[in-house]
Length: 223
Image 1 (cartoon, rainbow, N blue to C red):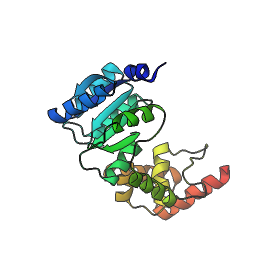
Image 2 (cartoon, rainbow, N blue to C red; image 1 turned 135 degrees about the vertical axis):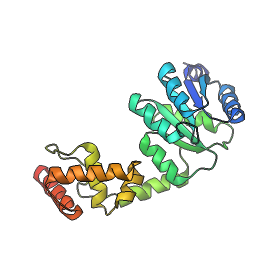
Image 3 (cartoon, rainbow, N blue to C red; image 1 turned 90 degrees about the vertical axis):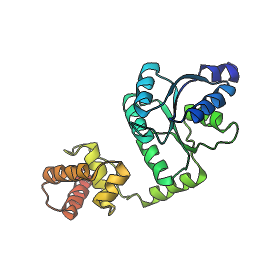
Image 4 (cartoon, helix red, strand yellow; image 1 turned 180 degrees about the vertical axis):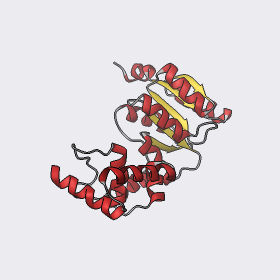
């Protein structure tokens, strides 16, 4: 199959609340031979159109009404795990970029794209590549270096804790506080406290230090 024919088969939904930006995005994609099947103006509409059209790629603005771009990423990825989502930002922010990637986006890019960059990002996303800046890639490397080793991050098979509770516990083991955990996992602090309460109860402990030690013992039992 010719590259041009393949590009025409790629179905894209876009989402941007600014009509001028939305038109510019549509034109840029169509000039590259890609097919825009629908355009959303709000976050909720982006989710609805994605559900209706089942596109190959969703290109979503970070700032949307009703649901922001990152909430859209979470909503559509929960329903369509294989969907490729690219997030565009007028003013890119590395922290927001990390959050978008953790929610399931495969790209986080500036809206001020050079010619051809969006086409390369779409093709790359469908090929399993990430569309991120070198600075954001470095942030990912730094985050990985700070991730606790020695078995942390792996849920013991025989465990009463849920995957989410293990995520909270792993971050707790690395020294993260409640607000840090909430920011990293994109949860409210109240939700994090609820997870902590549940995992304390399941592990039969009363403090963070005891919880970390109990988790270490569980990993050693299955190691």
